[in-house]
Amino acid sequence: MSERRAVVAGHADFAEGVISAVAQIAGRAEVFLPLSNRDLSAKDVEREMRTLVSEPNVTTIFTDLPAGSCTMAARRLLRERPDLVLVTGANLASLLEFVFSEQANAAETARYAVERGRTALAAIENEGGARRGD
Amino acid sequence: MAIELYRIDDRLIHGQVVVGWGQPLALEFIVLVDNEVAASEWEQELYRMGVPPEMSVYFDDVVSAAKNLQGYQTDDRRGLLLTADIASMAQLCSATGAIQRVNVGGIHHKPGRVQRLRYVFLNPQEEAALRALEARGIEISAQDVPAARPLPLAELLNAEGVR
Image 1 (spheres, helix red, strand yellow):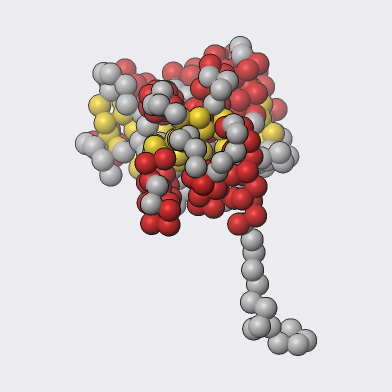
Image 2: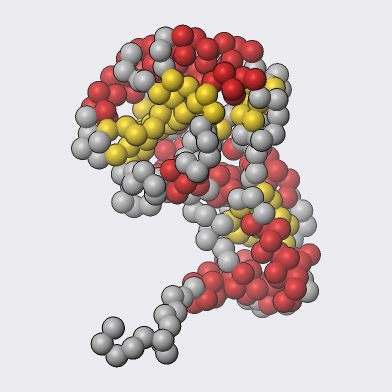
């Protein structure tokens, strides 16, 4: 496992919640730094995110929604910090992949996290419940 | 169909606007009225990337928005018009006389502002500007998301903090 860390940013308790799920599954909550946009202006979100990404070993920002203010703030930071990578639409599976990643660089780690998160997302219908002819 | 909502929100395009309002109102376009954004290709690209591909975004400064408003209002599609601050919306209302309702959706903390709601902070000049709009017959209410109760201006200005 690498020493890479990431900011997880989103609406309301998204970040705290999904990080607590990482802690329960992998015991590695310290990999992630949470940020909520609750009651913050766009400039405040950006300022708080800038502080978090300056922590040691932070390479990546995960956000919940592509249209969200956290994603907007992250895109702005990427302009001044091209070494950072942004992953939008983050979910638990993508964060777990990040925790256990052994990829050589942050961009590759992010791509694997995206792939894992996308694979985890599925619509499963009740295969046994439907009657013939329904 | 035209403009369904005239909203003041200092985050401009973000989750509440695109998803929270966008889905129930079946929005097909957003008019983002902001002098700074209208002058920056990079800022426009940033906001354009925040909306789904089926939704159009138009960028105007306050002057061009006043000229284009009638076109937006007679558009066959459903739209939402956004400004980041009260002053821009007030200028647009004055210049056109064609806006009947304004939604206060998010004005966040800054020095000099007093918290009225969880998502609305106002300084005395901003409160006066909202009162002036109402005095001209424009209905002002605060409402962050569609499921919340819209608070009329009098209630907003009497509110004292988080709710």
